[in-house]
Amino acid sequence: MPRHSENLHGGEPEPRPVALLLVDVINPMDFPDAPKLLRTAVAAAEQLAALKSRARAAGAPVVYANDNFGRWRSDLSAVVERCREQGCAGGPVAELLLPDPDDYFVIKPKHSAFFSTTLDVLLRHLKVRTVVIGGFAADMCVLFTANDAYMRDLRVVVPADGVASNDPADRDAALALMRRVLSAPTPPAAEIDFAALAASGA
Image (cartoon, rainbow, N blue to C red; front, top):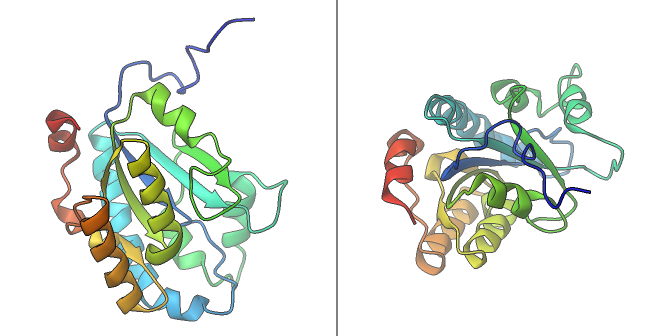
């Protein structure tokens, strides 16, 4: 048996120093507080869609880290199809951020995208040193993921307008915490330059 796979990273053997990590953006939004989150989630998704286009143009890998919402047999296509069903509250967000065939995807069972997932292995094989993290909710899954990225010595960048929470005050508090504790810049999404991040190292 080979000791490691040269094809784990989907045919992209060269290092990819910066990755865009989208947390729980393919989301049916069928939980009790979803209407509160949706008030700002669509605007955040619009910013993330533009950011994703720039990431792909710069050759940065895009990774979706998604909750399975208790459906352990789900894969990415199943989650997407659920969100595209008529009347699904999360449909408008999902439509803005539909995965492309060469995007990566990990199912996460808990808040952090690193906990009990393959994300750490994937990022190491891609030689990622900086993760740009957007998604929902800023004060929960994004914060937990950013914390775990920081503990793995990854540089963290969080677009302030590419995350949302049920309460904007909770989002702002989470962003302030990430700036202070994780040394994470939180610029507007439009100011994030993937080529500059790659060139600056970590």
